[in-house]
Length: 205
Length: 186
Image (cartoon, rainbow over all chains, first blue to last red):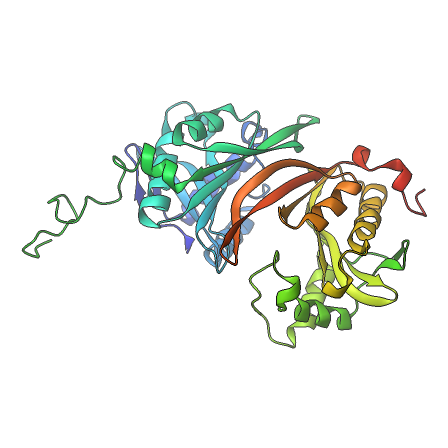
């Protein structure tokens, strides 16, 4: 899996990362607005090191990385782990970062909804999980809207600005996806419906 | 990293692992009697892999591992893994490979020694762990040395027709009971 393929949202597209994206990644990891809310995927480093990191990610067997694009420009990244054998039936969102200059434009929810459609409707996973600091109100609003619920409150986990802040563990189960989004969010139209990508009874695509 | 020798009560001590210990660790993790709440009981390295794994563990800057000995015999391993030196947090774990020794307080004494070392020598701020909820012996042993439950992760593992929840715990230096501090830190 290593690098993710195309997942289309309404306003954003999750796509395979390229070396051209690494400048953006490096800038976000060095941005204190990002670091106050999340643990950086990697620490700031020279461009050659970022290329090595992308190379290492391509060898990753238990997860995938996507770049997020909107209006033909890079606006974020998301990195997901898929557990380990023999129960590769869940996903954990390790990193989800939207460029701080692109916050409050709705890109985050659009990208995450598309990602979860892929996780549940395409990969047929049982559940997805994520960890958030209690101060990450934007991410919490997205998680709540999507259908995540809290199952643990960890104390004094994330260190920023000279003090520790608590972190939450959240979970979204497959039945919640089915109930809340399953009827409207699908990777493909049902077979035989005549929609794009479907197969009609005569066998024509 | 490997941990130094720490002598506890009732014949329990933590030791720097040997290559022979690593052979036992690999063997035990394939046995049903001690893996009900452990991994998938699958081997992912050749028999000669123990030396390479030991080298890797010894060189790691983000984990610290001990052999658990009881009455001078190797009976398991414990440690702290995935240490984040910025957050000063890490995940602790314990594995007793001798089911005939369950219920003798070896886990409780091991956790006491391990946590005393972590708080007094590593200067960490917090530790955490995820333990199968039905594995009461393990989370009770951790509670005695200051762990508290912060959540329950539902339906994480599957064994013998049942889904198993996990007990999520955390500990801090101030939650370690002072009267349980072992030497040389007492």
